[in-house]
Image: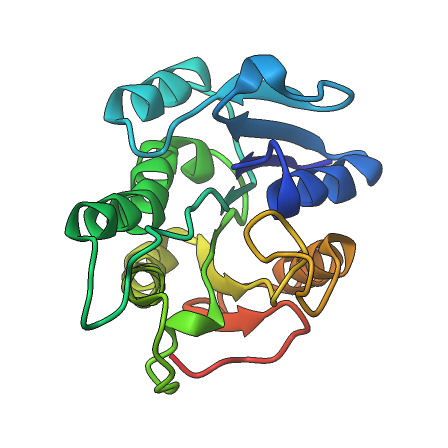
Length: 221
């Protein structure tokens, strides 16, 4: 049985991932905002706002000395309503970078002692294909830029943690029917979560520092 911590696990992909891991008997820690309103049918629920350094520090303090086998940094935001390259909500852009780039890094850095205490630990960030530099699409510029930036963070983490035996991955969950993805998205949340889990089951130091889609496809950065 592994110990898995998932951020943003109160709904959508994060909640579904937690259900998949719990169904296999793993010890799941669900970190989220609004913890007082969360389903508590399984796992441990803990409060976390990834944009708040004090909240992240409190999470780490509560888990001190506990080995964690896998951290999935799933919490994120879609960004402001106005986010084109010609008309940008700049404060909203900054908020998006804080949640989608700094947030995952805050969490993974804070939990490095826990990952180091496990044997063959892994860390993953839920990114998006929309951040791939190989695509020239526009729209949702703040969101796209944040996912491109967090992909670079993942590359750096993978490089820096390989010598410690910790594998790191960036994940594209697909276009998923969630509150963020909308009702017209391509796949349901269970398909995305089961695919992500399969990718992470196969993650190793031999495949660290790569960008994976939920269906196992390796994506261009």
